[in-house]
Amino acid sequence: MLDSAESYTTEDGRTIGPVVMEMKNITLRFGGVVAIQDISFDIREGEIRAIIGPNGAGKSSMLNVISGFYNPQEGDVFYKGKKRPPMKPYQVARQGIARTFQNIALFEGMSVLDNVMTGRIRQMNASLFAQSIWKCEAEREEVANREVVEKVIDFLEIQHIRKTPVGRLPYGLKKRVELARALAAEPSILLLDEPMAGMNVEEKEDMSRFILDMNDEFGTTIALIEHDMGVVMDLSDRVVVMDYGKKIGDGTPDEVRNNQAVIDAYLGVAHD
Image (cartoon, rainbow, N blue to C red):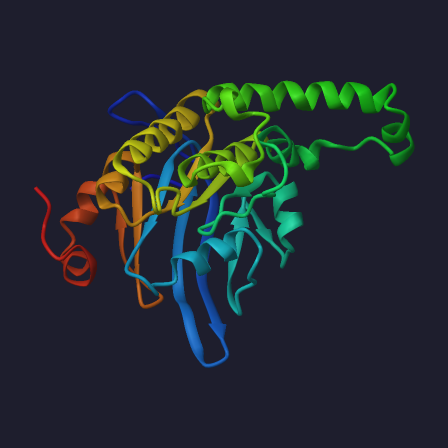
């Protein structure tokens, strides 16, 4: 078993680094309902880490703990080796953690370009006065941020809709715009909540390709929730499985698909 500070190389030549985030004995309650019960797992730098399980297993609640929307009643979150105190989502975002949502959360009346630009808010530090006259610091900041945004738009192949209001776009392209906004923040960890939900086969193939390319070209560490087991097994380096708020499996895709507890609770049959 690898030490948390060790790195390793995958069969396809990718380097997976040391542990960058660790969830230790996380318990989250809503009144008398236990959404997460004593769960521990980690996320390594440069990996694609999947969180799977049946509906109601607590997956989105766990993602909300990681992103600061919820603070657990018990357990600790460690980020880059340091225990993280209770934080608000904007404070977590400042640490370099970005996310997409299960239900699309975009500004429908704004263009694709402007939506993606909102992902750069954390990098906008010019004073209100400088912004009002758009000189010196504000101008340099705007140019630098637009360069990053245009690179992301090109990368995700949405140049043709960059000036289109988001409200006019079909569902699959909206999901891609939301991904672009999160990627524009240049996150060290990107959290994806069901990025393939509601997509057809072609859209899923495109999204899978973009996720793999993000991980490969930008070195982005990715944690995702996804119900499509074909996608999970193809994309992920490691998978943690939840059921009724408990962890029932954790390991490589092969280890998880052959775990009898996971088969009984979720997969139904072993996958060859």
